[in-house]
Length: 369
Ligand code: G6P
Image (cartoon, rainbow, N blue to C red; front, side, top):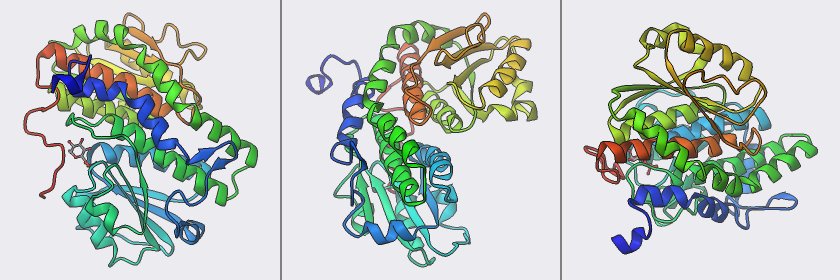
C-alpha cells in the first residue's frame, strides 16, 4: 500500500497529481495536428456520428457532472441539442426520444447498476445508437455499447473520483470536437479548440502548483459546517463537482448554485460563517458573476475566488482569498478549474482527519440499486 502511494499520503492525492499524465494518455493517438483522428469511437462510428441529431447523456455522481460540462460544449460548438440526466431517474421515466438521438453513458467503472440498467433500457427506446465513455475496458457497459471511447486514467483507488473525471472531460471534449467538425464549426475555430485541448495536460500541471496556497486556505474550513460553491455557464458543473468532492470526503455540507440563482434562495444563508467559493475564469458571463459576488460580499460572506487574472478581478474577493489559475482558454477551463477544487476538498479532509480514500458510507462502485 505505502509502496503504491509513493511520496503521497493518500491515493486521492496521488491520483490528483496523476492527472496531467492520465489526460495526456487519454488524448494520445486520438488528436493530432489536423484535429481529432478518424474512428476513435470505434470502426462503425462514422455513420452513427454523421447521423446524430441530438444526444441523451446518462451517468451517476461525478460522471454525471462530466456529462453536464459536455452539454455546454456540444450545444455551443456542434449546435446539437443535449439532455443530461442521472441514470436512476432516466431508467424509470418515460423519456421522449427524438429521431436520430445518440444515447451516451459515462462511467468510470462501467458497472454502476443504474447506468447499466439505463443503457439496457435505452435499447427499447429507439435510439440511433449507444456510446459509452468508460475507464474499465472489461466492464459490462463497454461490452454492451455500440461505440466506446476508453479513458486512460488507470486504476482509481480513492472513492472520490478525480482523474477519472478529468479524463472523462478529455474524452467528451474529443466527442464535442468531432461532432462540431461534422456540423459545420468554422475550421479556424476548430483548429484553435483542438490546440487548446492538446494543451490541457500542461494547464493541469500548472494548476497543481497551487497546492501550497490551498493548504493554507484549507485551515479556514476545519470548523465550518457549510459551504456554497458558485459558477456560471460551463463552470456551474465544475462548482457542482467541487461541492460534491468537499461533502464526500470532509463531511462538510456543501451546495453548488449557478450564481444567477443566488437571489432565489441561497443568499438567505450567506453571513460571515458561510464560505463562498467562486469559480470565475474569464468569459462572457464574468461581469454577471462579479455582481453576484458583490451581493455575497455585501452580506459579509467570506469569498474564495478562483480566477485567471481577468481585468477587474483583483479585489473581487474583498477580505477573502483570491487564487490565480491559468485557464488555458475557455474551452478547457472547466477541467483546469476542477483541479484546485479537488485539492481544496482533499486538504480540508486531511485537516479534519477523515478517512480520505474510504469515506464513510460510500463505495467506489455502486453495483446494486
Ligand atoms: C460512486 C463513486 C463516485 C462515482 C459514481 C459513479 O458514487 O463513489 O466517485 O462518480 O459512483 O460511478 P461510475 O463508475 O459509474 O462513474
